[in-house]
Length: 107
Image (cartoon, rainbow, N blue to C red; front, top):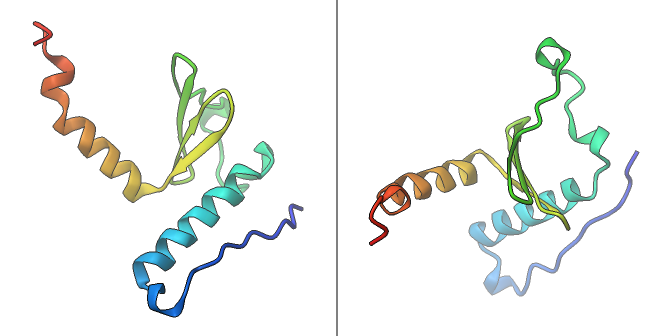
């Protein structure tokens, strides 16, 4: 079992806010997830549909995979995780940019 301890300085009492605590908790959670072995990332109670593991979406050197309420974004050098809220914000941003993304004339 991975017993590594992660910690981060929160700053002075004046800077200790709910937002700062949430930001720090998320950063620590992502750091802990990033350092877990691949086999520990999966929830043991979830069954793979038809016994086939999803390969996710591969775009160039990036791999995107939604699993256990986290969006995993894997690059050649590291892995990042977005929770449901962050993933929804990303999707909303991309949806808002769809006009620019899909514009045929390029200008």
